[in-house]
Length: 243
Ligand code: NAP
Image (cartoon, rainbow, N blue to C red; front, top):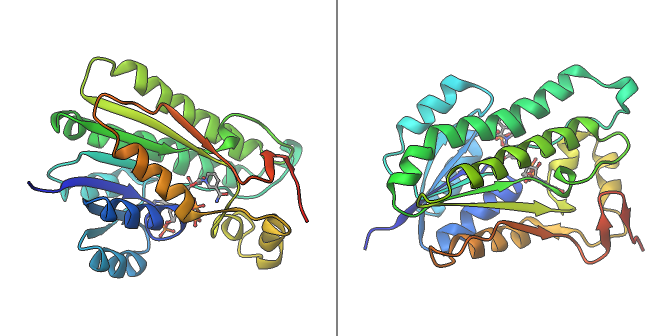
């Protein structure tokens, strides 16, 4: 039997790279997309998958990425992240634009582009990596929380709009995961980024990837609607126990 195909966005690092490994391990042919092709290509080679440059904020890049894909059974909308941590009164519009373009419109573009192939597969599945920030707010986080709320709303709307069609939708909702997320959020400030994970055992990218692979390998009639996973020591986006 030929392998089913899983497309993973933001597969050059963190949760996306770990998900590519987990889905390859689960016998999917993996197609990896991100802007840093130099990081994608060795991973795709290792997993006997394929890699193509993808900028989810650019409609032309999405269109040319999708042209490489003849069949698609699973789409993992993972590309995204945060920029800055300013209060609303000091909000930086460029940061907001980046977060909305990447997390929200990126998910919209990729899903729209691949929906016909996902449905044609007879058993399509879209897994969207939102965040606990998609369901709560915290001071300084409005740009990110509002983008993740919108991404979650978009994802849940799709779940309802495609009832009766052969396609599943799973929202993956992680708490604190130790990746380059905070380094990117704080514009390369390593010390500030390290502070986010100080005194707490955060989730690893692999912990999230394992859950994504679990959801993607349930029988076709089983839809895991939303999976919330956090470190044991984290209660929510603003409350955690630190040693
Ligand atoms: P990360 O290590 O910073 O990885 C982000 C990934 O997104 C990279 O592979 C990056 O690749 C890709 N990306 C960024 N902009 C892109 C664009 N315009 N087009 C295509 N790919 C793009 O962070 P991560 O923690 O793995 O984050 C993955 C997802 O999990 C994000 O949606 C994030 O919001 C969510 N999340 C993270 C946490 C956490 O605590 N880490 C918690 C909850 C949810 P390139 O730079 O090569 O393009």
